[in-house]
Image (cartoon, rainbow, N blue to C red):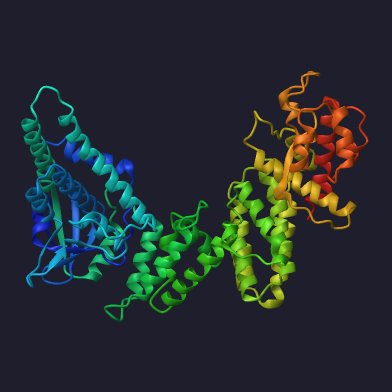
Length: 570
């Protein structure tokens, strides 16, 4: 591997060559703090010739290089030059604007205009909204996260440059003519500081060397993510066979878009770790790339990438339930998966991925899938949501083990793999007394709102279990039910503290239409309305003649017992 290095200014870098962001690079990802740091270091606090680190490139053709390290900085510099160009235009200095544009776009040997920095992943957004001299013809809202980062970064840099001009404009001590001169000098000063920034320019012979270097380098400001390294490795294992077609890159981009296009808290790094744990030996996310690199080679890279693409969709479907069209017979499964999202628990995800994968393949019937997902839901309701048990890592290891076991089992052994997991989950449950004690502490009121989603979930499960028993399967739309405080929050006739008013035992699910009738009435006025309504009432409410603290505490304990013994029994 031949490596040559030389000190260069950004001016020399931009004037000497054209640069492409290669297919293995991650998207532009600098955020506000990175841009502000760059601005302060290179403009605000720099007197010139400021060193900003290394830039590693490899030769593509005589005048074009691929960027291995320095992509984030080079993109940000291009964005800053674009804002300076626009600022020159805004004060009527068209020639200076065109001069600055010469660092962004210039003619090649064929006398054709080319952008100095060329990128595919943000095309045409970056080219139209940052690099182009004339007004953009692309008015669409950024569709990808990279485009969002570019827009936010460009807007921030534009604001910082405009602030420099504005400080001159508001001065009351200098004439309009002098203000114009000072604006020009201020913009030239920013431009020249940028162009005088220095890098250690490291040039490699070829793309193969670039792959190796990429794995060992971190870009300034943000470390390489696991997904960046995996993308690089797969790109290396799956080279392009046609100059204009890059199927592996397209597949990776589609997979990332599926994951990171969700409004749920999903990211490519976590997906890759969970995907790996559902099929391969247990490892930490920190050691994931090392394990993956030892397993994925040129022979199996295509299959591995195809699996990633297919399973990003499955992964998003059960973690972002709005992404899938659920069949009527799948609604119980959908609700169980949504409950786990409410609990904000992650340990079970590799197992769920393995289960949903088998379901899609036809290896598991819907009844069996609903049964195991319900068991996981019940376990984490008791273990995580209510008793807040801590795991030293054994739970994660257990799920990963059974996920692999399910993935590798023969058709006849898949049921056994699921049964073994259920048995282990039962053994790890906390005691009934521990569960009751913790549920007694749950609270929801206008003052305590943090646990509203969990409380609504508990009341829904409780109501659904017993109302179905008593009403022979009457269908209820719980999305249109609201939480009612039996002893009203604003009822001041008795001294019951707000912490008791918010307990589960003082809460009911009612139809929204009943809200207006009940208001803040006393229990003696509410009770007849309850009895006439269609809502489910347990004996503790139905048979009560009065309602005070003792009723609330007694009903809370009774509900806790029923939840543990019946509703969440698996």
